[in-house]
Length: 169
Image (tube, rainbow, N blue to C red; front, side):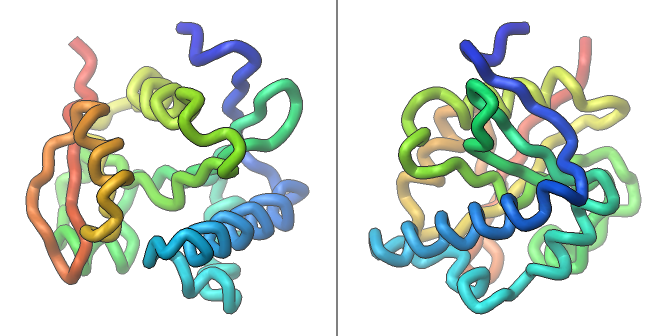
């Protein structure tokens, strides 16, 4: 499937760690500057170790457009501590959990987010659902997931919980 002209998605390597962490901090600062209350903890180094571990575990991806890194995301096939807090315990292992989907602001509103979600759905193996959460008061982000056919399951601790069926027919 064509995920957009010039788009390439690949597993991040240790060499990508600093690029990914810097990108996430840059986007967190952009959100703060635009009064979006999300990811501020990243500005102080919160999650740096978790991000690095996800890269080592080959759970983090980078998105390249014409060889430039423009986005990143992490997919977990097992719940993190945060996922258990938000979703409750899921021992079925039928879900993928999407974390830290981030697109450089100059590349937002160009269909990259939609392309990433399509790629995840096409490449998910042996999973039934894609689940994620986002801050409830981030209206644009909530609308993005609704427009991409995610179902709002509920709200926990100020975070909207979304899921989408990704079963292959």
